Image (cartoon, rainbow, N blue to C red; front, side, top):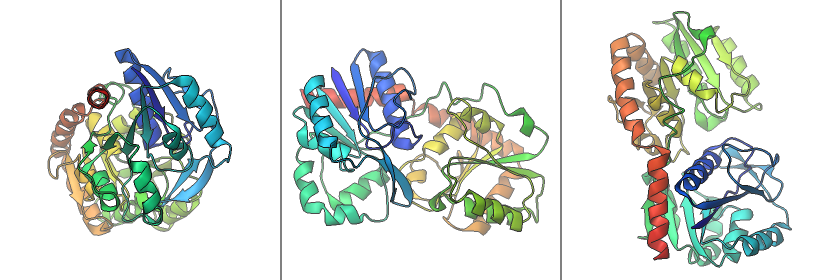
Length: 371
């Protein structure tokens, strides 16, 4: 079948939705389907694999949901989308965050094929959904299939647009790339316990809480290093100053880390920490760490609890509770055997989320809609 995958976000900028789309496209192509990605893209040559990309619109950074969404807002987008859809003649048009302005909405409004929407987001509330509810209800009728990536994402969209038609199909993990076997960051192999944080430097990702927790940890256990991997320049000086004030001397803020290099950091870690305070529909970074055989400490939020079982692959702690986070890190820091046991269990669970398996579930869902 011919499949169009539509992203509202800048394809040249790393992010969960873009990563999801690129892996679907890669696996669909390997199955023998014809796939085309439609997305805004600052650098048209950017590719994750060898996927076929149609760049539409120039993305602009817009604050949204505690993050920065890079989306196109050009009035010419509907015209570009109309031409693209007429030329491509898709069997399936799969829109990711289908009501995100302006690209996805334009594509859905003008599509004449079978339309599928995947809902990735999870927030406490959505002003845009609330305000636009009457209009979105009409657009919702054009979606022949509705997917959410987790129970958390389902609960979020269901609150505004209840339906029995949603299908949960999770995010995937590249278990060949993220694995315990492979190179490590040798500069950090010196006997210190490596605590890893991976994520955008945004308040909701919880790095500030992790730094405060590590200051508490230092009273009982001092032989550790914090490695911070993730994009974001606006808050980086603030976190660097916070670390300095807390006298956390051994902390490394990386520059840009490519997707190819990222597994090296997971393999180098002894403990992976994800102290996000909310807005996470799924724990993809948790799965990446688990696939590399690492124990995980994460906030006990719905999106993370979907993939991590407490005391099995790692530990869940109350969000924002820095004392509890410090205690959890200390319990693993002092028990290498427990870290290894949790890491082994995490690897087994992560294998269940391979992209090959996830892509097959999505294609089977397409087939059920077409027939």
